[in-house]
Length: 122
Image (cartoon, rainbow, N blue to C red):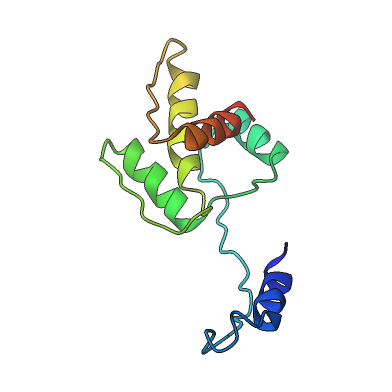
């Protein structure tokens, strides 16, 4: 069910009547996408392009730059904002330069682990 249909369902439900005190729609904003940085591996540009990713969000670019500088990174952004792409790309870059590179990915739940595995495989 799309968000508008869900909202319509809630507002029409007599059991919910009076529980909703405010509804506000915010207009969509265009994404702020930066081009891949100079020196970004072309093979990764191609693979990401196949997934419809044609650039990086600012938090992704900053995270990758910090990792490249050897710094620790913690990202705190909204759901589905592309946080996972940062560690996936960082490892892919390492694997391109060190073919025997390995990584251990730990996830808190089976559902998240399956989702992340599906994302890495694509």
